[in-house]
Image (cartoon, rainbow, N blue to C red; front, side, top):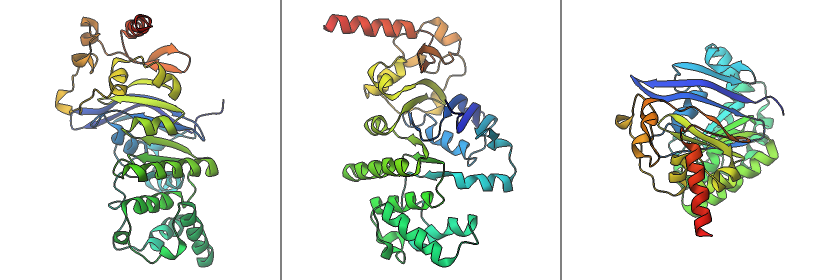
Length: 312
């Protein structure tokens, strides 16, 4: 196995005295898509922004090709940003309304490849617009002249102009119509195949995550509670929260409910015992390539197997 492109170690983010993220650890390899799921307020977007240093981390490390992004100075970090790009949830809000589409796509090239001739820059822009399903003659138009789906294609084109090694998609399809969501998902899959980039795909749409991702991380109130290959996670979820999430019996998380001791999920968990209230569970191996942070995962697995035998 190759060395991970991205390695997050013990990442912690505080909002005031509230821990928005705690003890986040995972790896992402070149060309891999990692899905990140969890209900609203669980910390998905905070994690994305912390990786890119758009939100400050209280502690931990974010290793990019072995180099800790959290320790870099401003100039060094700016140089690394060409390899790490993000597509945001609101396609229109992420574009400058006063900037034409051509200027928006030219901006990263002007910043990171200032010696690139104008003609070559225009060619790169036209090629990228074509790759995302738009026409090169749209370069003089402005964001308000496009639909939401077209604006998201423009946002993706802008992120891909520098051919990044990692693309973070933060709820990139959630604000779009269902029919358009499918088009954007297929576009992202095509771009990944063509450019070989890694993706961190954040979404509450489990069907989309299952379609795109090689592995899935499940986050609950700022903690990773389960990690597994996609097929294994959907076929046999171990953590009670993951089982609830896949069953769509979820509600929005709120920071006011956050507990300071023990498992954060225990107030909602049918398997909770005094140990769950007293001690924080950490990720442990439950199968090859499958981890869960649950004191009682063995009972969960046994219960699931027992229910399956009864149904048979």
